[in-house]
Amino acid sequence: MSGHLADQKLFEEIDERWQRADEWSFPKSISIGWPIDGTPKAEDFRRVSIQYYQASRSICEMVSGNKIEDYVASYPVIYLFRHSVELALKAVALHQTGSSKGGHDLATLAGMIKGLPEWAKAWIAELHRLDKRSTGLRYPDTDVAFFEAGSLLSDWLEKTERLHSALLGMSQTRI
Image (cartoon, rainbow, N blue to C red):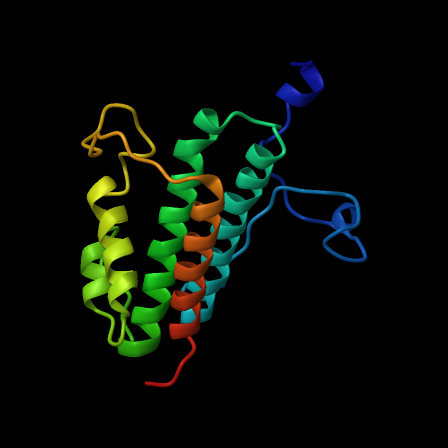
């Protein structure tokens, strides 16, 4: 690493150098932002859920295009999707009940939601059994349920789209 980069912070305040016409223009960046008042709303959870979901899909596109091996991408893809589901469940719970308290436990979060279709409950239960505390897919030495199972990429894309879309729809529907 050059001395110039070593002397800089990893993140910096956004200024005029970052301005661009739209999200497809340059300069590109890695940046975050959240509400100043610190009170997340259902829409905030929805927005971040969509970002994790899109990142998961983008990696799947890289796998499909032979830009990365499927076995290299599997843990990150599943983790990003699992987290998108957690955030979407929190959006629905916040929308329906006014509370998103449920930690990282997908079963607890799913149990808070009214009107969740049976197929969605079953798929969420699978994700929960795989990684109950949201640590197993992030660390190699945790209690992730080990078994050999998978999903063909085309099936994974279809199923994850169905589940994520259903949850996002529920986070906006009047109950």
